[in-house]
Length: 311
Ligand code: ZN
Image 1 (cartoon, rainbow, N blue to C red):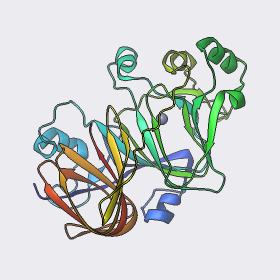
Image 2 (cartoon, rainbow, N blue to C red):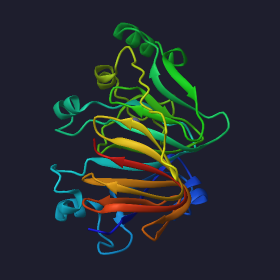
Image 3 (cartoon, rainbow, N blue to C red):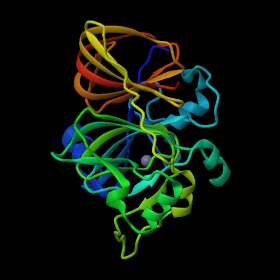
């Protein structure tokens, strides 16, 4: 089918949210504490809706259930991926996600969660937490028990355009002043390890220390997943990760670039600039699905795209 499917996001207001999505993309956010936009989501907790065209007003979940041909007849009860934009105006809790096997056994058959982050913008001096310094599980438990969070957690400065791959089992946290794009398995299973001792409505949020200890990879394993950029003349492409669940690339288009869509589906997040795909205008903040059998895509303009397909 030769039709691009654009989505309107589902927004979530949270204590740590802000209003950068309105400032940057003109989104009609519900309030000044909007932390998450589920921009390509078939998750029952917040679906994105088709913005225009033949399927206008339908949810991605509905397309998955009723029009599996758009996804090349791909198998599976649920659409496999979830894409979010996250605006952190405060620190998020330190957390970890289980893998498929653990989630299946302990979370009523749910999926695990592997995710990745592309930094869209950040404040000067902003940082992020990925992994920990404990060498053994005993050391990990001791440092958690003693609350030695500064010694335990690995903190890195971040810059616009940085990319982080976060396989299940990796301790991680988004920190204050970060706007990012998240591509993840379609799952909600999160174990909270530490919440900076904060209170919500007068009480601390629930922690999941036992489950966290079960699933944290120890010692932490570091993996550089980013491949060298490839020059295609009017487009520079860079594979950010070729993982078990998704392959994510960055395309920087300058001029006219034509390419094929050979996958069951392809997701495109427009992260900067503007242009057109097969004559349909696109701009930063647009998120779309290119269905199965679409054929050749002609992209024009000066724009940065994050392109995802299942591996
Ligand atoms: Zn996470």
